[in-house]
Amino acid sequence: MATRTETRQIRLAQWRKIFQQKAESGLTAKDFCAINNISKDAYYYWQNLVRQEALATVQQPALVELKPPMLRNKPMQPNDREQSTVSSGLSITVNGATINVNSDTTKELLAMVLEMVSNA
Image (cartoon, rainbow, N blue to C red; front, side, top):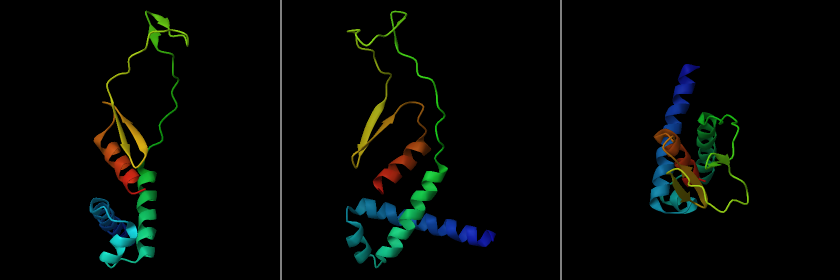
């Protein structure tokens, strides 16, 4: 049984490399498969498995209570004219999806999300 699991993990790793090569090639999936002699059915089958694995490893964030930002030691009201400042961060747009990153974002999580979005 362990051999079957190990074999699957090896194949998933191989297919992740193939999907990375496809993303770097700039080709459509159809053209990439034709050039590399890959069955479109196999390509999409393994793409689905790689995505499922990636989603399974993403931890769901815990729900947290959000409190309104403070202005001069009082809660900000909708009609306040002053703008609150947002802590430093970065917004990345890939394939139409916007990803907000801040100093708490781990490299691993960012890499996983970028891989999922680029393969979408």
